[in-house]
Figure 1 (tube, rainbow, N blue to C red):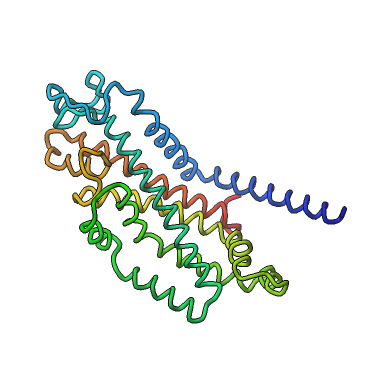
Figure 2 (tube, rainbow, N blue to C red):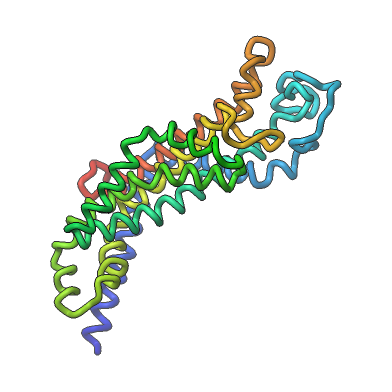
Length: 296
């Protein structure tokens, strides 16, 4: 009993040390730490900002049309209907970030499930699943999203589902490759010889050991989802006005670029910051979780 307790304490200590080392390595990645700070501030602003502003995103004031930034209480200016850009930007951020995180969750769960099953069973099961993945990958994601969005009501929920349908394949590929490597490791063979079921081995042994690549892929999926949502909303197939999103704010601004450039600059900069920050976080996580990286 004493030996088992000591072994358990040693394992817990090693796990705690690994977590602390991973966090330290991540925070030493300057771009990743900066990206995390930007995402936290952006998320906090989108959650609390609309309650602190004097106007909401739907308030129309025709007397204040095309007000430039820092005009009275319109900190980022107003649009052609006199609606406050800051209020619309933050409410649009709620929708865009919600779509991004929801797509990440759906894609990660589905892609991980497909990848684990294909990698563990291999044979005809793995071949069929991977050929399905290849079939989806054969279509450019943006065209697939546009085709699907043209046939459904463009609500935030449906846009999330459509984008998720085009983002799970990369995760499935990554997970399948990782599981193919892990299934031949000693701990997997030992679990198989001890009589553990395939489900136990897949989800209690293999998936926890593949969490590093899965986390990195999930983080990068958020950036891709935000960009896709903005793209299809810009083209008029995504979130529809008066509900704001960063993409349809850009769509509404394109005809006023010469007279009111802030209408496009503000959501454009926000999209760039959000997507770049998530990409930086993904790069930092990849380096922090990879023991072969050059980070100390």
